[in-house]
Length: 257
Image (cartoon, rainbow, N blue to C red; front, side):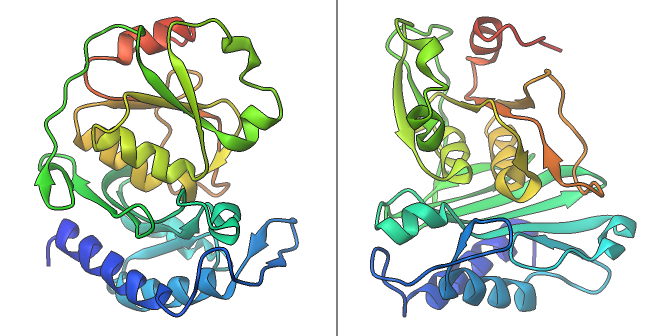
C-alpha cells in the first residue's frame, strides 16, 4: 500500500474510533504537563499505532511515551490523534486527526481529517494534495491585501497578534495548528503562522501537505528543520500556499532561502 493510501485508510480507521465520542460532551483530564486529554485521544492513538507502523518503522505520537528507538529508523510515523483537543472538548469544529510520514528526517506524506468540518486532506510530495478526493490546484496572487491569515486562537486571546492590527490581511482565529496547515495545503486559506514553539506531532503532517501542494512551510528562522529529533520541540512555523511565500516571509522579516 502506498503512503497516501495507507494514510487515508488510517484516517478512516481513526474516524471509526471517534464515532462513540461526542465533541462538546466528553470528559477530559489533565496530563502531567497540564494539557487536556480525553478517551477519544487515546482510542485513536491505539488504532493508529496498531495500523500504521510496519516492521522497522518508528513511531512518535503525543499520546505515546516516547521510545528513542525511533531515532534509528529511516521511516517514522508522527501522529497527533486529536490535534486541537481543547476545541474538541468545547465542541468547536477546529480539531483533526493528524498523520505524518517522515523519511530520513523529511516529511514526505501526510493526512488531516476533520470530521466536524467534513475535510479529508491527504497527499505526498510528488503526487500533490487532494481535498475530499479532488486534486487541489490553487495558486495565490503575491498580495497580502484581502488575504485571510489563520491564527492560533490562544495566541490571539493572549494578545500576541495585536502587532498585526492594521495589516492589509484579515485574521481568523482557529484551533488546531495541524488543521490550519491542512487548510493552507488544500487551498482554503493562503497562509498561517504560529510564533511560539510547537512539537513535531503538531506540524509533521501539515508540513508534508503544504510542500506537496507547492507551498512553503518553514520555521520562524527561515529554515526547515529535520524531523525525528531527540527533542521534538520546534520553533514557530510559517506556512503559505503557492505564490505567497516571498510576500509573507518578507512581511514577517523571515529570511527567504
